[in-house]
Length: 124
Image (cartoon, rainbow, N blue to C red; front, top):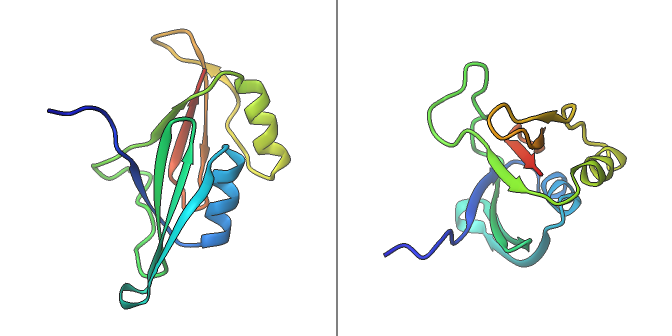
């Protein structure tokens, strides 16, 4: 029986850029597992009751966008103060889309892309 979500695995190309981005979202690195035999490193981040598993490797193809490929479309995070988080991201050098209202719920939301182009939805 499923109890809940255990973690979210994300492929990344640049360790430093990915850590800066996810730290700006409030995640903290708590484990690192270099795997020389696979030429990658696994970074475990935790924040807001969510665990992210970042696989850092130079050997993966870039994310397919426009048109999107089948599979995970985006990661959506529930936030309390969207305006404040958008300001934090902009101050850190990221460019979230303008805040808009979800057409179904009327709630505020926006998107920002991680350094490898994965869309991250921020939903208040």
